[in-house]
Length: 78
Image: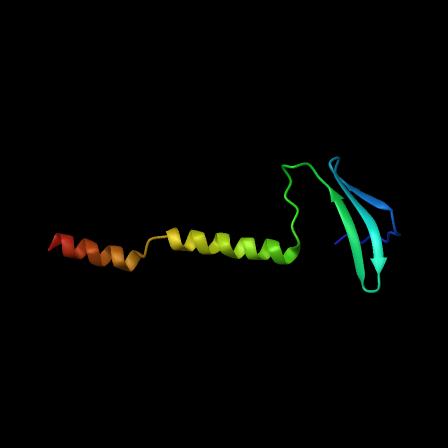
């Protein structure tokens, strides 16, 4: 992990397209602003993890139950 120390209103540039700026520092929280092209998704980690879990569940629900298919195959052969 790359670690930067920034003060209020200082920026970090990622690649040529993403700009991260420190907007405010209050107590234990840092408010940041992110400028990125529309084709780049920016999520809070907890939102990203929820999306990842939902996508994984959707993929699992589309995988056929092999044991059920084998049972059906045997019935059709009988």
